[in-house]
Image 1 (cartoon, helix red, strand yellow):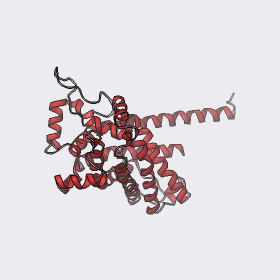
Image 2: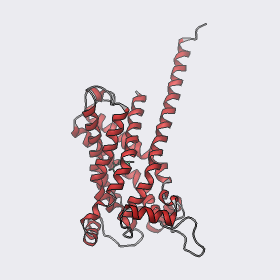
Image 3: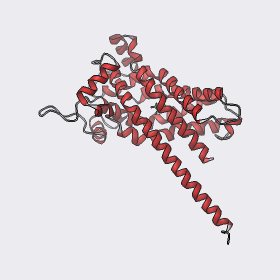
Image 4: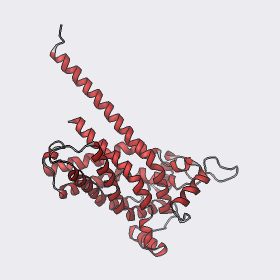
Length: 307
Ligand SMILES: CN(C)C(=N)NCCC[C@H](N)C(=O)O
């Protein structure tokens, strides 16, 4: 006897739901994996931007490895891993919904009726602006932990690191610097991410459209390349404010180090020259390609699987 039609439909829906669940899980895993692989580069970048003891990328890598072993490169990684899904859902969700409000087209319809670049830019800027307030505390904790250069196995008698882990770091900042302390550097982060997320999405859209016939979805290889270059282009523009943001986040430890974004820019440039604004650019670009290639692949395939 053939199964009843509604039973078939239910089975089909359950099966689709399971497939989607698997897909979502796989892509979150891919995003987290991208972040894990990119984290050592991020640690070197943050240290180059905030500490003056390193002569360059290689010097920083060698010193970190000798003093802290491979584990030193992975300091501060747990909160970014735990928060990446939330931060990306806010960024891509606000971006996609703003585009929907501006163009009245869904993701699927957008291939046939591509939105204008100005709409993509505005939606990207709004997405970037909103995600800052989810990202700021996690980013602050990451930067503080990445800058702790004490080795895990400390010689007896040497002082312990200031923070014992991410939760201890969050609690200490809250107690010592107040609730607003958790948002230290958020203004620089807003200035960094609002325009650069516009650039991020415009670069991605432009590269996809250059390499795909009108009305067609870009192939996975094209999504990876466009996502990777969107990451590099946006980080190239974001680097000067990224340096300032990281320095302001660390400045909470030495009270009164800077009076604000402008003061940090002026005193950094006076003491270290204009090159200071490009610290970490090379290593960050190497990191940005794989991380953002995977991010856009997840975004495209999740949206397509949701139909
Ligand atoms: C220039 N900026 C700030 C960005 N393009 N941000 C979006 C990419 C974020 C990604 N998790 C990454 O860490 O590269």
